[in-house]
Image (tube, rainbow, N blue to C red):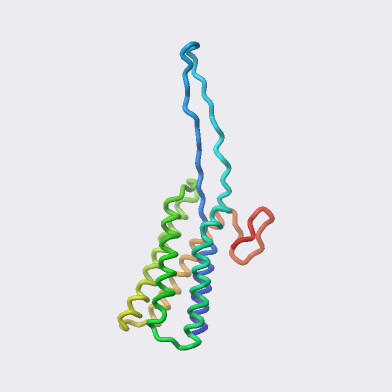
Length: 188
């Protein structure tokens, strides 16, 4: 089980690392008319440049940290052959981190070309949250196939990882674990 736990924890971490977020804000000053000359003058303030890749890396940091903690905790629980109930707190914390991240992803503005992939990522994260909640229910009630549900969580994490890699590509970020270009932050 240790290898299984480590593999799924790593997959979830990769899924989180692979995700991305973008926000764009455009500020345009209103058109004004000067009464004395009766001519309209338009003034535009350029929109601030947003580094969407850096923003994504900043937003993905908390769920990545939660995935790291979950992986370490699951490994420790497997080593001591802890009962299913011991898995409830770390899974609860992880599910909450994913839900918070989904909320941030949905509230943030995105460039039009990235938005569909962000929504796909949010959907994949929702599937992983559901899989984690199934594990929590099984551990709480001592009913259900805990190992089968654990495997389902792994499959959901893989789906999330794939969706996250698409968003990373949209943002020009390298795949997780690769050497970033000089213009990309070294954060994962």
